[in-house]
Length: 253
View 1 (tube, rainbow, N blue to C red):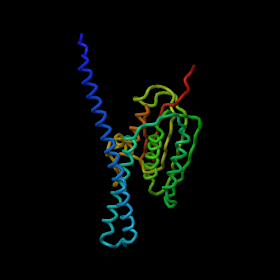
View 2: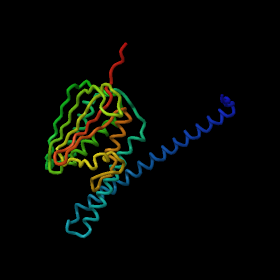
View 3: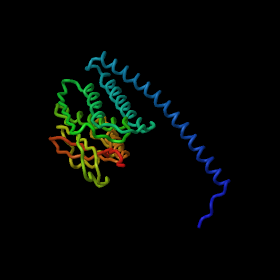
């Protein structure tokens, strides 16, 4: 049997907790300011390097150096955007996955150039399928997967997105139950079986300019929401990323 803490010990613990809380709040505020300033600097670098590229002939010795600055800066901006969501306060609610994906698809279409020849198909078996989630994070999860799919189809292809209800146990890490299953399928180059188990590892990327965080962030978001992401792929044929999120159901009286 352990002795109960005295009033003075409890008071000291409370003071320590309050100190730590205040310190974290100060650090969060400081990081928010740094993020804002860094974002402005990156926009300036991207803008100036883009302008320099426009007025520099490709045959000029400096062209590739400017291009490298632009690509690296744009890559850093993507890295910050991927990490940003985890520093924000979560606002959870019941959201239709159909509505979230439609918004993501519209945003994705704005980034695809006509010459890329990407055809997008979308199917939803039930537009009433809802998930209790942080909407911003789920938007980020899906857009990461869709952008990844588009980038795998450098010579054009089909991006097929399907939503349906799933009953059962999707993976070893999840319990049996009702889930919203979203399949994001591409007809890209596919992922070799030798590396497919590593694609969700932090900083692992097959892209020359990749950060290796997009898929890791998406996987983490799914896990935080008590879901998971599974992948099947065949080299030369494409990949299917299956996102499982717990289906929200009204409590029974």
